[in-house]
Every structure is written in structure tokens, then in C-alpha cells.
Image (tube, rainbow, N blue to C red):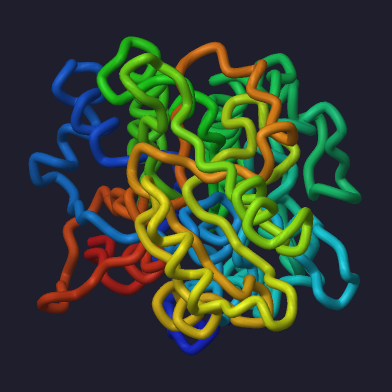
Length: 413
């Protein structure tokens, strides 16, 4: 079979891989987690990459700094303004209701994964949470499953079967480090046996929500990642590691969450439920963050006076910025018809809620850590190869991961 030498997807051209490429999205991974684990001596492989055996950059994720928009940016190579996935959750104007952004109907462009599979590459996707599976696997031929639903995989639905037996781990809890470990171990097993040409691994940020960089829990987690990345390297794969967003403490010195309940505030100003606050962090897995993040959308009633209201919201202690729809679409590269009249971002240690009575924080067994704002935008972008050419003064993005692995990394000798 004559395979093409390059593939063009969403305006970017990618060279055909000369060896297997594995792109890893470590959910919630700010660079401090890696440097702390390296300093503790538990991540020797990542340490070698930082010391020069590979190439490392600090990159920006897309806004909002949540899971869905960033995973889809990584696998499409473009920002949300082009692919359309602008949160985990949004107000669908076509249906007049709030919905999860998990459905392929909401994706506006094809993925790099689908394009390579259509051209004959062996492609595999393993994600921790099942919410991403259909989006990541849209129009892709190959293996695609989640560790959350590993017990239910079938050849017809996922392109693989008997995953638990292949991986040698029991089905993990969705709220556990093992959910991500299953992704890595499964990826290694696939590389050992099926040897896909292109593989995308996406984890969950359960640990990062629980533990700060350098803590024993965090270091143990990154030691696990390190072992599996080292094995993928031994198997001859090009490995690119990035993240969908960082993570920060969102609480005061007393350990209590620092929350601005914006719906309550707007109700007091405008009347009950005259405005609608949407939190794009919302997904089916809210135990570890209570649906509290540092980014919110506000839909206003006609004649509310958005500029004056933006100024009032911006004056609330803990708010970093407020943009109109048009301003936010440009600044944050978002599809304007899928965001609110106002886009609100809070500061590093503060989150935004809707109404106090709509957030169940009983599941928080440690002080709140979360994401969504500009303060969680810096993420690692690392590769286990030298980079042939580095454009000067380039702003690296996490969605440059496939370009880095396919176009810029040194080729196999």
C-alpha cells in the first residue's frame, strides 16, 4: 500500500510518521508537577527530557482552560473558534437548553486522528473519561475506548475487545488515580502488540484536583506516568506530552473555597433569573470540583445594558476580567454564537458559581483546587526528540503537539 507523505488537516500539513507517534494529554498538568517529581527523583525519564535528551517548551492552552475545548484543540490543531467546542457545557441556542458539549454534532471540523486513519494509518485513542470518546473518535477508523467504560468495550463499538484482560487491571473507579493509570498501561500494551502508527492518550485530573505539585500523592502519580512514558520510549515511539490546562488552589488560608456566586449577585441586581449564568466547567464528574471554575458565561435579557453591567461585575473582588461577546470571541478565540453576552474570568485563587444552593460541595474532602481561568493557561509541551527547527519568538500552544511530533522532531536515523 502506498501511503501519503503528508496530510493536510484544518489548514495545517503534517508529515507522515517515520515511527509511531504517541501524543499524551495529562489532564490538569501544570509544569510544576513535572519539575517537582523530577526534583524528588521519582521521574527520571522526564528528568532526562528536561536535561536535554528531549525538547521542552511552556505552552498556552486554549480558553476556557477546561477539558473538552483543549482536547479537541489538540486533536484538530486549531482553537475553539474553528472547531466549535468551547466548553464542557454550554447553552445551545438551537435547542434552547443547557447541554454537555460531548456530541460529535457540535464539532465543526475533522480531527488529525480521523484524517490519518482515512489515509491508512493505524490509529488508537484511549481516554480516561467516556465523555470525550465520541468526540475524539469522530469519523476515525481504529481503536477508541475509555478506561471508565473499559468493561463494556466491543469490537463493533471500539475496535477492540477483552480490554481488561489485555491490560491486566480491574475496571477503575472514575474518581481514582487508576483511571489514568489504566490509560497509560493500555497504551503501552497496544504499542507492544498492535503497534499503532498514531496514538492519543488523555487522562483525568482527579489527582491534580486533590494534590498540589510536590506532594506525595502527586509525586506518586507522576512516577507512574514516568514509568509508562519511558516504556513507550523504549518501544521506539516519538512521545509528545502536553496538558489541557493547569490547576491552582481556589481557597483561602482557612481552606474554605473562595467563590463568587454570580447568579445570586445578578438576581439581586436585575431580578430573579433575568440573567442566566452558565459554567462551562460543568460535566458529569463534579465531586472533586463542585462545578466551580474560574470562567463563566452570562446571558442577559434585552435592554440590560451589557457595558454598564460588565463594569459592575468587573468591580466585584476576585474578578480578573469581563468581556463582551465580541471582545471575548477575539481575545479567547471562541465561536461567538456559542458564548454568552458577557464572558467573566476570575483571579487565580477564586472560582465562579451560579447560586449558592446549586453547588454541592459535600464531596470536597480536601481544599478546592480547580481551573478555567487565564491563571491555568500555562502548560508543558515536551517531546522525547530533539527539534530540528524552532521558529523564533513562537507562541507555543498545546494544539501544536502533533506539529511538534510530526513536523519538527528529528527523524529516525
